[in-house]
Length: 216
Image 1 (cartoon, rainbow, N blue to C red):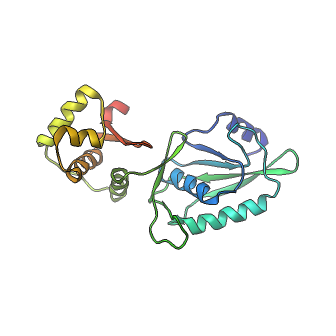
Image 2: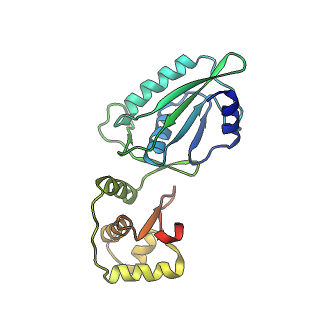
Image 3: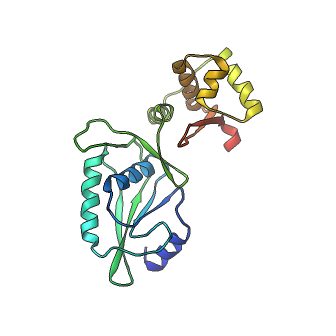
């Protein structure tokens, strides 16, 4: 990518596959963005670009590169597969472009480098969203790629009839509708997503579930 290509890319603004960061001031937050890209559809993180789409570049890019490389190693597990490119801009400055492909495994952000367990995040539109329990289980199920078999019972029938009229439903709404125990309601929604009957729409506030064909 050269400077002209960079300017065209920045004009798009932040979206599902593109994130801007001005500096490596908060490396743990940038690590979270990288995790979110890898767990979703992949993306590009540009360091040296602010939210207003102004390409300011980095005066000491080697320092920022070192800080992020260290942060990615400490805060992300398992380690990410990514590439980085330095782009020269006006004023003897550089922009660091981090290219993150969609991963075949789940990546987690550690709250502290010494922690053993982390949190999974996803890129949703231009936001970094923590994966819910249901989304996490669905991510794990997709990696296992097992055949899901289930029988339509009363709880499934009630759900599908509701969706036929209301388009979408949340876990809380499903529990209220059926009076099912939260664990059973959650497992039912997870199973139907893995069986390709429903689609989960991750959200910052609360995930939504819709018929899969509604989004295809």
